[in-house]
Length: 266
Image 1 (cartoon, one colour):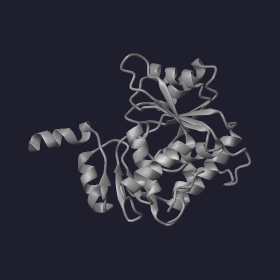
Image 2 (cartoon, one colour):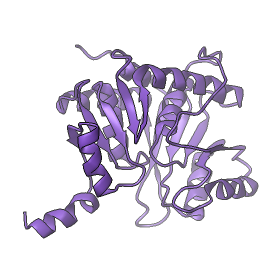
Image 3 (cartoon, one colour):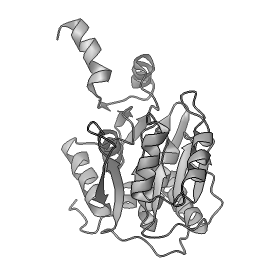
């Protein structure tokens, strides 16, 4: 199939509506359900005052809510700033300040930390941060009551979509922005390079706030395959899920694979 020259992020979910898009333990979200949830979230964010050209920061672990918000922002033309769940408050404040994010999305708690309290503390310290949206369960889509029809002006494919932060090894992290169409196009090409198909499943343990994990998930969706999400990598659980969910693909980092490779002297 030739590549649509005006490919949108939501177009990656076209077809195979009843196939799972996201799997998180016993929770499953189909492709049709994720698309519908994204459109409702877009309407909800517009009702909260976010519009094309605004910036939203996502400080969440891997989960359905993360992807729902990304797709919603793509429809609105709102730029997303992914934030590492390992960052300290000062690093988060720097990214919020540089990006001029109007909204920050946080989990209630994660890794024994009170993210909600940290988010509200940041809001009190910053004039540009107008709202903090607290997510009770990042593994589930947000229960938005808004209609799936977007009344706000729709974002365009030449809009900026995602602004990733650098590692910050020489100072505070810097931001590098990427456009809506370039991200969707790259996901499409990766899916075809990996020959991802609707019968496949990808172990997605790398964090969505990083480029590698981010593109792995989008490429999986572009190929029609299922994303098996892990908020924190656990080797024993991953091995179990390989059998349970019939995982066909996995990508990882040195910290995931190198210790086992070293012991095996491969």
